[in-house]
Image (cartoon, rainbow, N blue to C red):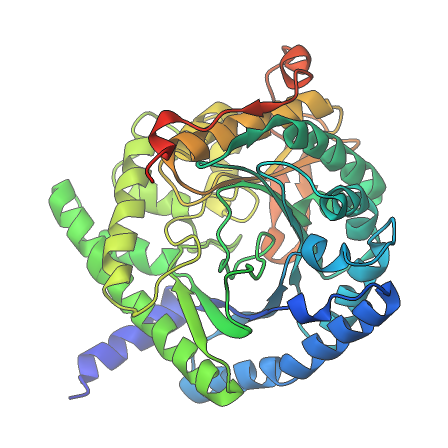
Length: 452
């Protein structure tokens, strides 16, 4: 039976607490687009994306209107281009990036993910070409997002790839220096990357996925914060239970939208990612949830414990609300996209080191962190290596989306606009990691990875 109180509660979540569907992402396999002729492969890629995703935006808008639930983004993820393009003999994949960009424009989406490579154990010819193409591709395109998986629990950490990614990030920052080095905001370096992540910039359609699927990413930090506002002085048992119940309600909305989009598009439902994804808007912040638990400012002692509780309770509540939960699922902590995080950095409560500690218990890693433009590539690589180690040892996904903003230094801000927000420039450790990074090779997999 439909309960009037539940209907009113959902309406209140949408109108006052910023509940939304953050993204409907269509995953499309491009494996059948491989061709020894690069031009032919690109024609196949463009045709397949534009045919499969032709109605994606309209269907999303129709559902949004009919159900009254905001759907912020409609996006596409594709098979890692390094897998598809290496069938041809071209020495740059810029043309493939431009094809993805053109296809995204044609279907009306804001981002397309999958200019990606999986190099956790080593690089193929196609992987190397794609990595070398990333800076120019992100500088020349508007909609294309790139990701590289450099580590996994089963294989360890590819430190040659880690070193290379530091150099790639620096070059990307330089090529987009006139726009606050924004190219780096479209590049994620992963450990244990998942194949069904609907969120950008790290989304790609894994080789183990179906031909075409619909994945949905929900949000709702404001809803969780509102639920905790009436619990002043209550025990953590009550806090955890309240977050679980709230996450269940949020995920139910995502499940509804996912099935509706799947049916209307004639595409199988993949997963609901029940992540709490913040925005720069006031009242839509993960940091404010942590402060609602009793922290004076996000970043003070106790923050990691509070985030661990939040992340676990969100997963426990959400997993009961959907038949298929996947992606990253939990709490995101992107600095530039969370007004509470921005304020915490500004007052000195939240440092890069504290953020790294928080990534041990959250769903992702260092996300949308801006650092001085003169940060060395070796330091960037070392930051990536630290995050990869956290992911590998703890058998979880971690990522680094870090932006060395050319022309900016500590105390200044970079303005990215839109959902990407604004980022205070955070200091990095001034001591060198260059000799460490230059060793290369692989950091072996941990002993607990041998489970066969």
